[in-house]
Image 1 (spheres, helix red, strand yellow):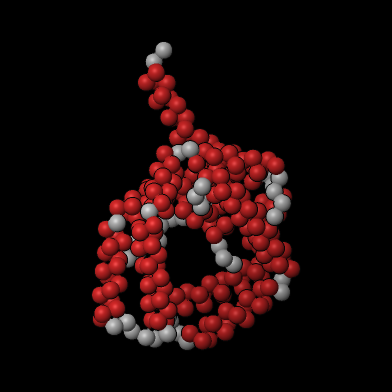
Image 2 (spheres, one colour):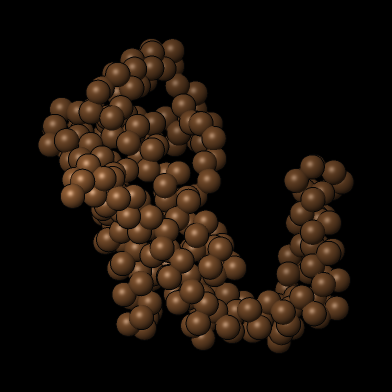
Length: 133
Length: 122
């Protein structure tokens, strides 16, 4: 019996366990109705030509606002108008509903992980936003 | 939000697995040591309060006086030099890449960015 080797093996198992648990959780979440509905809604939105046209126009205004080109107030008004137009489409409404449901599920799951871990999970798993003073 | 027993068990298993990692244990230990030290905790709270107050005044268009800025820098130096706060921050910094790796595993299995979906405000 090699105690040192056993200890090393057990430490390797401990390090691997979160990764295995994470994969299991991901697979479980894939099987939920919320996930299936969301994937279906995303496909529907991506396959809708009118929504894609509106989306492209909105991206154009957002880019203009980001790079400060053109009249800011015109871009904002136009973005609001296009957003309103988009929201009138039933396929988009279904998408937003599905998105809201899957988000609520993920947030509940995140709370469970965080409570058990003793540290907030998602908030600390986010990519760093750079240094602060 | 109602969640199935299977998801609940999987989430709890991940939480427990994270809890048992060296990175989380070191962070929790450092955080507990800091919380037990009233002086260090108060020092950190004083800086948080001062930063909030200065930011609120700046948003209102008011500029802090040079004396107030000196007081801020002095307090910030004390916070940055506090070994308990430094240790807590350092262990938190070491924990984040571990969590990010685990989040990548969830994303790999799910095909969707769990963290981005969870943290989005909209």
